[in-house]
Length: 141
Image 1: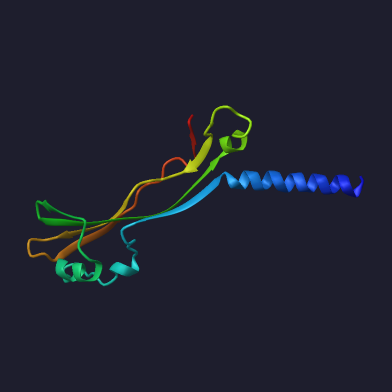
Image 2: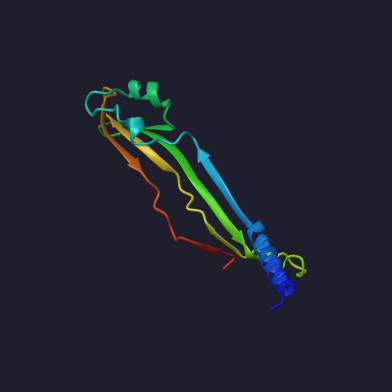
């Protein structure tokens, strides 16, 4: 194979790869301050008060009454959203703009909940993680 033909093939391959990568998006989404196990390690059931927790983590997003006290909820989200739009590749040759998107959203807010008794002392704590749905969601199908 002549060297010029090989160079043209490599150039076309690199051009096609660059065009494909141009249709990709990666976005990081953060809602509120994410809370980890290390952030709540100071909480001891039966000893720590809700005021102590608020002093460390800030005000909860919601406080709800329950039969034995209150439930304080901290909501947060930290995720990456990525998608590939294969319709972008045919955009120069097509009269319509087809969006053939493969994405992984998994939108769902995680939460940290505290159950406090009538004296505002923490009795239980728990992380609520959003279960991820299907790995890839083809759109518009």
